[in-house]
Structure formats: structure tokens, C-alpha cells
Amino acid sequence: MLPAAPLHSRIDVLASLREALLAFVLALVVFGPVSGLMLSGYKVEPHWLRPLLLAAVVAAGRFAIHLLGQTPAGRRMVARNQARVHGGVTVAALGQSPNRARLLLVFVLLGAFVIPFLPWLPVPDALAALGGKYWLSNLILALIYVLLGLGLNIVVGLAGLLDLGFVAFYAVGAYFLALGAQYLGIGFWTALVCAPLLAACCGAVLGFPVLRMHGDYLAIVTLGFGEIIRLVLNNWLEFTGGPNGAPVPPPTLFGLEFTRTARQGGTPIHEFLGIEYNTNLKLVFTYLVLLVVVILMVRLLTRLRQIPMGRAWEALREDEIACRSLGINHVVVKLTAFMMGAMTGGLAGVFFATYQGFVNPTSFTFFESALILAIVVLGGLGSTVGVIIAALVLTLLPELLREFADFRVLAFGLLMVLMMIWRPRGLIRPQRPAFAPPQEVAR
Image (cartoon, rainbow, N blue to C red; front, side, top):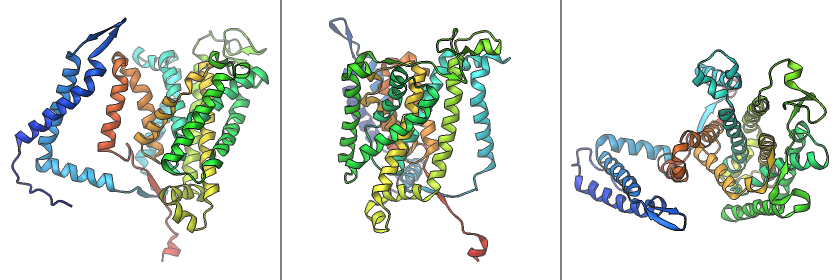
């Protein structure tokens, strides 16, 4: 280990300039082909101003960071960051969460339940727009990714099993509702119960062949499983509809339908309530049910971490050999992790199919698995709150930056790089619950 530099060392501006020049050249090499060459018809038109500006921004940032790193304050920041990188999980005693955090959670949940009713409340137009069709649709999609992130967090974050085919369980849940409605007359509520069970069975089928695999080998097998499911859905034309997809009937509530006219033999809900028809009624219903399901899943996963099953997942993640030497059945532990994660993915698939009203194989590509894995990694492996925040950010932020749609993938990549440098354990470090013995025993 190299000795720390003295705090009174001289700042080397020339070294910072060399670093900035190198960063400028590398940024120009990366950004040049991506943003400097634009396809117009059959011709490629050069636009070098944009990559030059981007490279200049990168160079200026590198120059400032290198200069800051030579100051005493900069060295202290680097030391604190290294301590965060090499530190483990935080151990927190149960029942000792601050009242301020609980109060904030209550306000957040109340706000989440009020959002779809904002257009009917006496609030400013800018605030009422949050409950409009556009933002309500985006919030539903964000909550679906929250569910997906929570499911993959069990497999990757808690059990330490790298799964690159998680989108397969997502597809199973969505197609169960679509095909079940088409061939068996299954509705939304039936699919909400049965689709997670079918997805869990698929998780067990995937889990058995990969019990002895680790790391990259496990990732390749799960990636292949996800692609197999997508290709089956795409090529089984007689059953799934292939690339044409399959329609999904709108949800109902006790025979009440959320359409303008009855389509499934029920009664439109606006006629039952005696109110004017609104196209957002279906979205409001889907959002509220999805929000309740997300809250219940968060509560369930929090409790699972505190029971022996959750402890066994974390023991398997830390050291499988030590886990087996303690008498823990690693086969059961892996299968429960795969099945619980798949169950959550199937739930998300049901809500996605309901939200879209239509499913086809193009919605379940490898990019979806990569995005869900990025949510888990950026949020923090094993951190429930971090996964929720990351899912909301990665789904809502692109909508706020829609004017820069051409650079959204580039911004996503830069975010990943910066996160891996400054916070490699994610936005929020996971907290491991600690159990304090009773005072009589402690004495």
C-alpha cells in the first residue's frame, strides 16, 4: 500500500492539464461516432460540434477533479469514498428506526394514494397534471419496474445468483393473462393469483438445472432461458399469436367495467356511480391496485429477510461452502430464491398486460433484463429502498428528459459508470437486521 501524500504537497497544474487532455481525446473517440455522425436518408452527415462540446465538458470535469484531488479536502473525500467502497453492510437493530423516517414514509404513501385523484381536487393545474393520463401511465410503468426490481433483488441482491433471463418470468405473467382470457376466460383477478404461481413453477424448473453453476455460467444459462421463452412466444403462431401478439381484456371490479360501454356483460362503473365517464378510470384502478400490491410485496420481502429463509439467502450469497458446512440445504435455498423472484416477476407481468391491453414478444427482450439488473445494481444489492428509488429514477427521469431522447442511452451509460466509481454498492447500502437479546438474558 502506497503511503499517503503529505497534506502540504504542491498542486501540480501541468499534471491536471495532461489528464484533461487525455480525457478530451478519449471522450472525442467515444462521442465522435455516436453523436457526430448522423444518418440522413442514405447519407451520413457529420456534426462535429456536439462531440467537441461533450469532450470539452468531460475534459473540464477531469481537470477540476484532478485539481481537487491534490488538495487536503479532496484527499479527505477520496479517503471517505474508499471507506464506503470497502465497508460492508450496515447492521441496524430492529425496532429502532427514527420516528422522522416513519413520518416521511406515511406522507409518501398518502401522497402516492392521492395522486390519481388530483384532477378532481381543487389544486393548481400543474399539480393536477400529475394525475393526468400521461403521468399516471408513467407512474404505473414505474411501479411495474419497482416490482421487477424487488423480484430480481431476491435472486441477485440477497441470494447472490446472477440472473440475466428474469424477463422470462415477466413474460409468463403477461401471457398467462392474455392467453388465459383468450382460451379459458380468465380475468384480471384470477390471473393475479394464478400467474405468480405459474411463474414460480417456471422458476423452479430453471433452478433445478443450475444448482451447481456459479457466476458467469449461471448468467449464460439464465440468459438462454429468457431467450428460449421469447422465441417460443414469437414462433408458436397458432397458440400465442407470434409477432402479432395477443389482446388483453380490461379489468373489472365486482362486475363493474372501466369502459364507456359494457363489453363483458357487466355494468360500466361510471353508470353505477352516477358520474361522468373518464378515460382515466382504468388507469386509476390499475394504479391503485398496483400500489397496494407493491406495498404488500415490500412488507413481505422485509419480513422474509428477518426469518431463517432470508438469512439463508444472505449466507448463500456470502459463502456457499460455509453455508453448506453449517447444514443449510443449498438446493432448497436456491430454489426458494428463484421461485420467490419469479413469483414477483409474474405479478409484474399481469399488471403490464393490463396496463398495455396488448402483449407481444418485443416487450420481453434482453434489454428489459439488463434494465432490471441495472435497477438492482444502482439501487444497491439487497437494499429494498434503493431498488425502489432506482426504479423510479430510471423510468421517470427519461420522460423528464424527453427533449434529449437521442442521448438517453448515452446518459444511462454515463450514470452507470459514475455510480460504479463513486458508489459501487449502490445508492443505499443494505442494512442487515440485528436481533438484540432480552435484557434478562443480556444480564
